[in-house]
Length: 115
Length: 117
Image 1 (cartoon, rainbow over the protein chains, first blue to last red):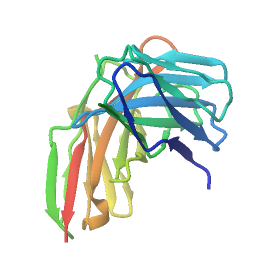
Image 2: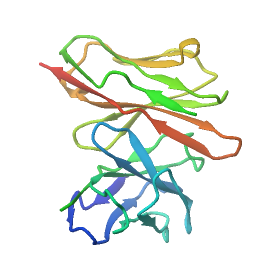
Image 3: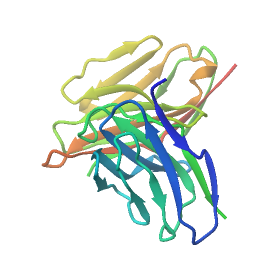
Image 4: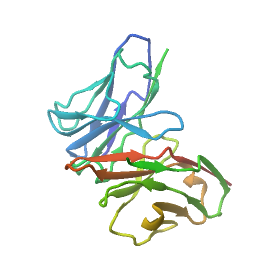
């Protein structure tokens, strides 16, 4: 089945550690996105990528890094510089490269808890 | 600035009741898109509808219907004869363009709908 796979589903991290969340898609979409969701809040954009080897900061990029070496993969690293990393992280993709115009396809998310 | 307000934080209904989820938006753009997404307990958001600012026709898809009114800046979502499987968090979202080719997508805080048998 075509879709977006995020791993791990649950992750625990000690303070001061970097952690990488995986996102893989087999939809052949050019654009990919990372969102953060906090309880009772809407989604906030961390980073997005419209094409391989290119990515743009979103609204809350500080303390995060990404790479886009392959079309199907868009991993997110939560660094120790992120002050409040405990959250639910969602990866998405879209056919449309222009952000905000088309349907987004989401993965099932990764829940990160900092101990 | 763009803003999306979903004033209803949580709604609880009994199966077969009709329910309307409200969405009010603010934008200075003349061209924009409005979206609704459903987030079931499994976590992933599922696209329900996209509407552009020039199309004010209401839309019906099975038990779902959407009422877009530019005069009141609202894009409300109604579920007719609700079912337990409709229980989820529903997000309204707005996008526009700020003078360039890049869009921006703003999500509301979501409305949690609980449908009880």
